[in-house]
Image 1 (cartoon, one colour):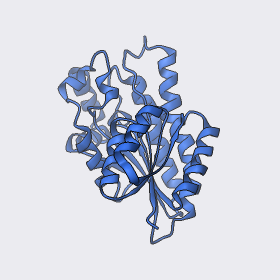
Image 2 (cartoon, rainbow, N blue to C red; image 1 turned 45 degrees about the horizontal axis):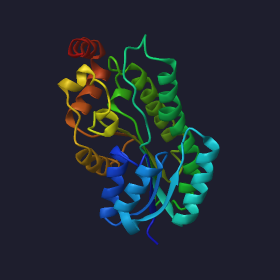
Image 3 (cartoon, rainbow, N blue to C red; image 1 turned 45 degrees about the vertical axis):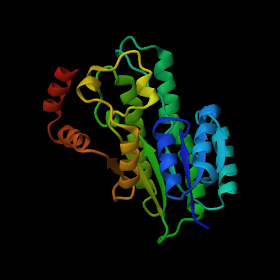
Length: 255
């Protein structure tokens, strides 16, 4: 039986597009999201390739573990997972509300922790040295370099990057690959619903969701814990490591 893929955040945006692209190539799918209506639409688009859905909030660790157990039972062989669930809040660091900060930390970071804790043991049940499992965590280029008015979001995604890097090192003896995916800005409902785009988005417009999803599926097949999807993201990462002060000067003026 062909191993199944689990996608979180599947009700819209990158998660929905990944689900549809995986379904189109014949993969068996398990889909999660807290938006039950959106999840139902994705399920309909994926048709027979969707084995099971779970409407849950990954902020709840008990619910996440229970959903993981049900999903593994329905899938039979669960070997790959892409965690896309997340939220975006934009605003100046000193005036953003405590509720917005809390939502991003709880959903973007702690949700990632809960998903990893629930899924990794299940993924390893069917993993072998010749058929390795994979857990891909979708972070952001903003998790590599903080961006003005995205400071709170950047902090939550920095946490995802750090968690994924550490988890990869902890599990290096196990037959599982941990990937941290850092997309650039993407034209998803999360971005489209912002009252005003951050200045840096006007200079670097959000990219199409279908192109980013294709790049993710290609990228996570490559070696290495960090998956960057385009040339500007790779340039930013290299500049941040080699010339952080120069990059800071550039970001300040671009924003």
